[in-house]
Image (cartoon, rainbow, N blue to C red; front, side):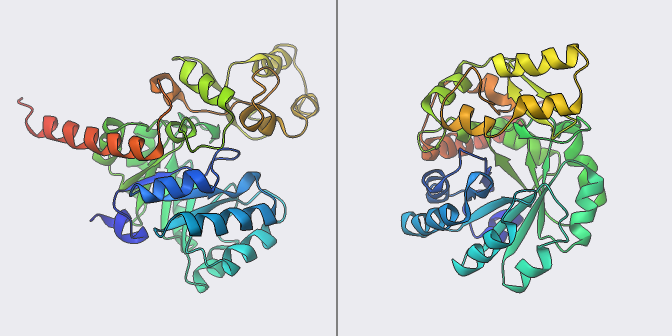
Length: 314
């Protein structure tokens, strides 16, 4: 048992990313049942939809699971109250000040984790009373840090500054990646993209197949003026780049983005006009598997790679 498995009362220190339009109760419960920690992604759910997913998740697993809450979304107070009402014991927060909700949640006996992209924010999270941090490198899919600090450098930088547990994210989708992160000081890992391309993921099949088809260099971080996001290079991405090439303003970017682009791409399967968020690790994802298979293979590969390093001669 390591510090993360103890903190969440789980078998393996693998946390599934609470991704928008991808992380419903089916994926969260499947990961939890496989021995990791499943997270319901509240960012793409109306409050009552979130309540429904929490209730279904409780029926689908007897194991611990949590909810990921991006704090920049509306209805945040209602979402937090639903989490309390439904007895959720683990909450991951992101995209906001950790001080805002941490004390409130911890008073209710909830374990709180915050997602950060720098050691400065990790320190702020620790000072706010957070139980652990997810340190997310530039390789990650979805919304990301502006500084482009890679996971390889971010983990040890954060470990130097804080004493609370560190969960590494960004570019981790295999047992070897998990071992590398833990060798650098991470206590556990958060995996997003690999679970996005799982059977239980609520992503559209068109999006899942696109993840599998995406090769090295097929994604790029963009829209830093709004909220940095890593996207697959499709027509929408090219339209964004064209605006940059023609010195488009922030207002032009907002107008082009419009509303519900991520839903259109990831949930509805519009591969042309939709926003397709995925990490650089997509280049190593070659098939769609069950969440249970993904967890089992990660742990087997982790153990195999660890053994090979132990036996390595210098």
